[in-house]
Length: 383
Image (cartoon, rainbow, N blue to C red; front, side, top):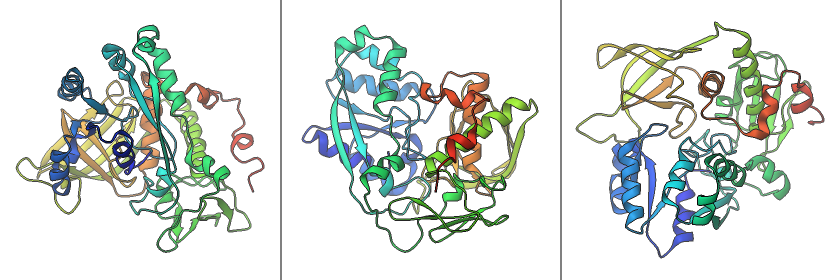
């Protein structure tokens, strides 16, 4: 669910030693170098078929060691789970050993992906057996994938509608950076016009204003206020609109000016940064893939990625930027505006339209049914 998950895993498995899988790029950050080396962390390139990483995990398992990884590939972006990354079920069936999973509740609400500030409130963790070797022998890869997706099925915001846990924070800034994912106004339909003011999220064009409280409830803050029940549902609504937009327009294209970051070869990245700036240009997402036209280290640099190899965008620390691997090399993408939320949905749904190896949840099939009334689904009875 969050950046703090490792603490729960270490407590649940103590005194056994576990080898956790972390993003390859994290090993180049100076403040993590000693900790990663001390704890035998395994590097993995996000959303890439990383053979050295798989070999490392295989080696540890063959030595009766314990390997821990996130089947979704990274921590939650919206407070909900994402589908399991392709190949997870194949990996588990290959080894046919007991598989446990950690059920977590509340961790995202103390450490969201839209902002790096930590908040304070109750969190829970429970470890349990997910598959026995006999289960993995008997079940198909599709069945294993479905079981994992169902076991991890969770929405932090809706969960707290029932639990009513107050999450404390420093200052009135619960809405900070929320416009990165809640980027489309439900009243006027404008994109990237939502702005934050303390605990208020407001549309600059029509004045639609929503307050978010310590329970992560949305409350009316203007007479014309209109909103889904939670940030996670707001994103679902935006995803439905993206699905309809790209399937109605064969020439759909979205371009944003961005800055480019890279990992220097002979030194660590300092000051808790994830990369060093090395260029700038235009990034375009269209039906054929992701395209960059710009510079790197003072020279012309272009790349094109198709949806066979790219099904989502790794969000590294927060939703202000994302990363991509180009010819195996890590790059950060820093858009000039708060557009990462839209870019993420575009890439995921372009992949599902054209390739669909990384399928959406079966319980979200309604999103692809254009007869569904989105007003009825997302705004009925929301007060």
